[in-house]
Image 1 (cartoon, helix red, strand yellow):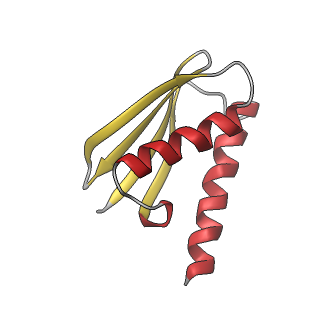
Image 2 (cartoon, rainbow, N blue to C red):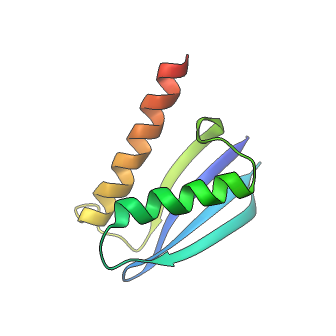
Image 3 (cartoon, one colour):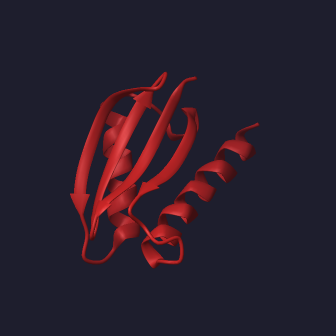
Length: 93
């Protein structure tokens, strides 16, 4: 199953990044944002992965969950980051 990352919108402008290994939660980080979600998302993902010595390309799955409107800017920012990871992984092969 490998490593996965959940981007969980837990409330209004609240995000929990949860790292899972083989389906079990191994670490998490919570942050809030007023603006600059893109920067905060990248910084916090990088910190979480570095702390757990995992590379972005080793993530088997990245999902957005929680209370988030798929038409919102926050959802689209997270989705764009996920697409960038997929593109990066495909370019490595």
